[in-house]
Length: 263
Image (tube, rainbow, N blue to C red):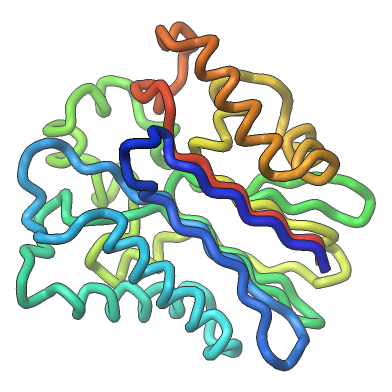
């Protein structure tokens, strides 16, 4: 088995809000990967004493442990338990009902000798490659489908669309959001490789149109996860004015994380 993990902050003087892990159980059979993209908070109050990296470290750590220790529990239930555990860690000190309480996008994949399970919540991506080389992108497209008018200001997003029906969902404080995730299972023999990307790395496809998802996975497989992140950084520097249309284009540089696993 070959695995790679690369995670880089968008700016050197700011903490990386992403989380990434690969877990290989002691049994030697199967494994799991977890990628979170912490949602950068506004400059206004969030109702929480803690930072986004504090949140993603705890939620990501809980997911990494529970995907292995609860191998027979569906991933949506694993996510629900991980959110509940993380919420309990700061429920007494923070207002978890605030729309900007710390939150994150989620990608989880878990494989056994027989099955590959996956879960995607919000705008990170999971790429699944078959033995024949076909690449399928597992995406939660609810955020991308919203009209730009719905995303005009933080106030509009928070009041009408963030973690609301008809809007989009992230892992925040409500364990029930796990039921909103995109989930599925595949026979193990139908999966050759997996790649999980936060939207900062997925810009290679979604913003800069350098290739499709199959091209993106081929780049990671052939040149490595670092090569994808480096190429995104080059493209960002060449487009510092943000001239390319993109839903998440307000940041010149974003945290970028890639986890790759050949099964």
